Image (cartoon, rainbow, N blue to C red; front, side):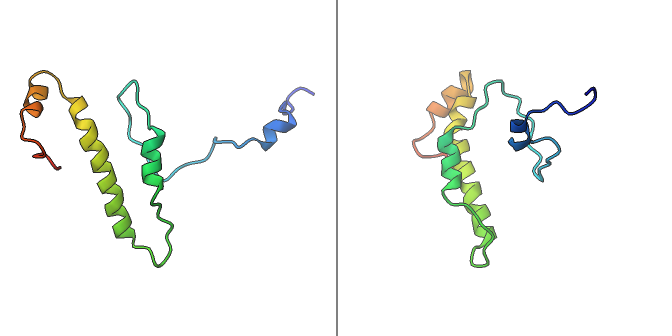
Length: 98
């Protein structure tokens, strides 16, 4: 039986990702320890857009971007060190909103 497919029956029932293309091109991640935590995914999944005529795609996009900005603002302090970190600590409370 040389040259024949050697997969077992279970392999035919398993989903295959080969040959499936997404319309979204994911940006290259330069970080070595990058992880999307389930809480962040849940935050976005809470208000999913379904494409129903009564849904406003522009409002959905606005809400999505607002959530992303919130995440970025929370992560921003961790991107600073040395003088830049000192600068942030010396800013007036609640002075950076974007």
